[in-house]
Image 1: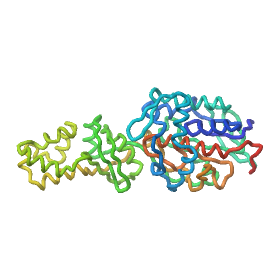
Image 2: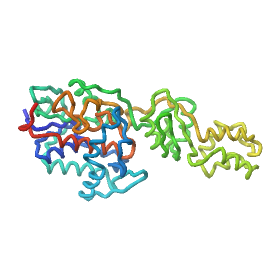
Image 3: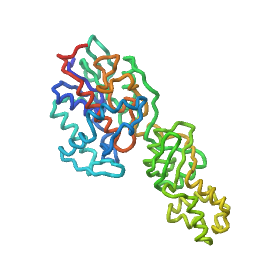
Image 4: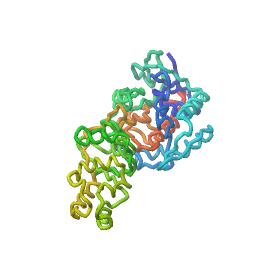
Length: 403
């Protein structure tokens, strides 16, 4: 039996951060990872360059049943704290749109930083360690695994969620929470592309690869970013963002001319270019292939007419579609491609200051396993760093722990 001050399950972003921070405070830490190598999701994030945080991080960038829950952790360890560590390690990075920060070279730079800090702090990282059971014996947690039995008075669950199962996620963290009496809020795929199975789906299939800036919205949220047409539906930042606020059976609205009053524009074009076809006046605004398909949807019988032959009301009707194209997704691509999992361990049962379960002393939940989901743009990584740091500050040597 291996005795430690702390056991962390899951060597992803949150688990590595927590193990490092706890060990740096002098704790003996065992970090158990079921995969052969740690941090696989870090390596594939941001197209291989890891969008590790954002320049502007506020509570409004996160979804949670308790909207105030994230504030304490974000205050304890901010985006600037992590940026400072990145600079300290000499990792070159750059800013993209909307404050997103990416590595110049590779996501491996972030993973290597975490692994170096863990090693320097004395973290014992055990790979290919499959935890089979978690029990409580007096003050201590007992974890039976294929690598032996681990014992500690404090257990941090950083197992991630259900997104991208090929990267090692799963239900184990939720099972531990339920075992110790915590509630799990319903889970679903987040930051995930929309799919379509009707006529719209056929159109999207023929437009695969085209990206345009739009405003995508529903009754709950609105995002002005790019969408990408795919063979199955809609991807791109705006689609991924809105998926967090969408429920099955609902429609979404896409303004494909977000910086233009289409009604005023078309009526003005009719006055100034009366002999021009409608498709022609849109060519400077939208890709040719997209115009062709919009034409087939909304003015196919009038395709060869000059603008002068359209009534003003007809142009207004077409303009309404351009600024408010109503679409009804059949679903999403699900956990297979989802970047995050919505829902999870109910944070109303966790301390917002320490991430500790209110009904089970010594049991902590951090990162994606908790019901906290950030917007696209580095916010989910920042939640991993912040929740892990806040948790680590509350941990203590076994000799000082009192159940």
